[in-house]
Image: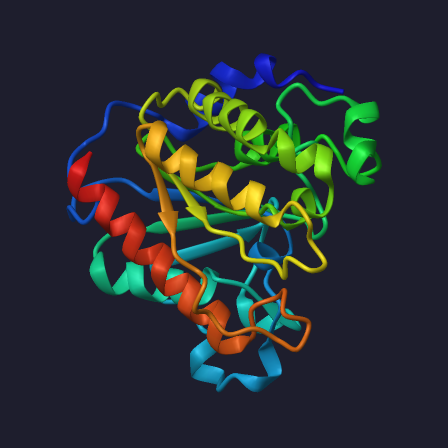
Length: 267
């Protein structure tokens, strides 16, 4: 396993990271890079076939990667928040290139995303076989040729349902989330990197630690500078009462876009 600490300077150099440069909508800036990470509601469970062809198209100034592979939403059977996220940001910043990099995997807990990943710990939530996801994301960013002018804008995080199923993982969610945020900021060379956190709302009758996870996310937004909650409680879902349906995931993308634009005004 490659240690994430060994990637710090390589990743920072690949992104051309620097001090915040003002409003993200400025037309003379380099590419704005956003990292989309988490579990199944970030992967997205929208049905692409239900969309009009024009709805599943990203604007020309938006580049979308799933892992290290360039992708278009229309070529996938399922879509996530990237569609409306990209459309709304492109409308707000028509003269700027926007790069969306998504690395997300359904059913994964913060133990699978731990910066100091340990297979025994990950197996508490049944995730030993899929980690270390955090290191994987850093490897993906390192491998992208984004150019020296690229600016990392934010991490967009939609995750927590897996931890909400397990009492032990739910009880330590705040600690694990705090460590993850600190690692992103340290390893990507941006101490004030915004972390936009979609508030989870799994059905509590099937997810006994749901309230603990929600309270941990709310606490992170209160206590950690630069962490912002994205509201989700009114988003519509499929019949499983867990995954956002087409309308819900499209609205989630709009809310993430609004959050990106909001944090850009205060940086």
